[in-house]
Length: 236
Image 1 (cartoon, rainbow, N blue to C red):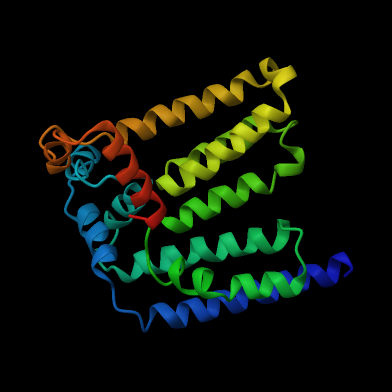
Image 2 (image 1 turned 60 degrees about the horizontal axis):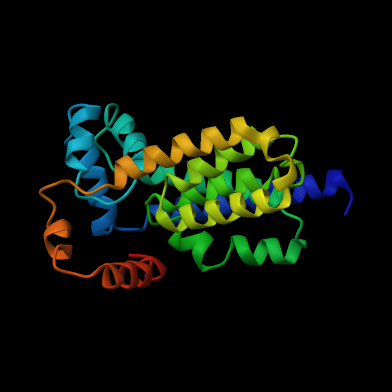
């Protein structure tokens, strides 16, 4: 497919996706987890209060920060849904533009269950993880020349959800193995990733009054690891 024709396909599919998404949110009642994060942001009077209110969440804050900023303008949760489909449409546009797959594969992926419903109509943090991950993968062929930006997108993805943390760490490990002889050339990128990882740990560390800590005090390290590992892959 020649570039102009491909660009037209990208624009058409992206606009079609946005149109279907808009119709979808107009007929989608908020689920409990969607409303929960909206209310967390809405009822927080400041960033520090938001951080305090999220002390038991176990999720990084970036999605809630976006919602906090949005709730300074409106208290209508429709705009959270609208923001979410804008993000998902942007993610789809990047995927269509940057991925090396066939047009058929792209269409099947974009209009499949996860991209059309799970990570689109349900307003949660997952779409941000995909967005940052796709931005990183869009640089994959240039990852050596643009490693700083590559690491930046990866660590942003890692700061969305633990499943994206695993993927980001895997991609960083792969890069490290590939470039172990010249690793010092990429110090700045690794430093950015390390700082982001520290921020992630700070956000995820449970509060001292968390019921999570009281439940794990009498559990062996082996049980903590196995239960946590299983829960991670279940998506909890």
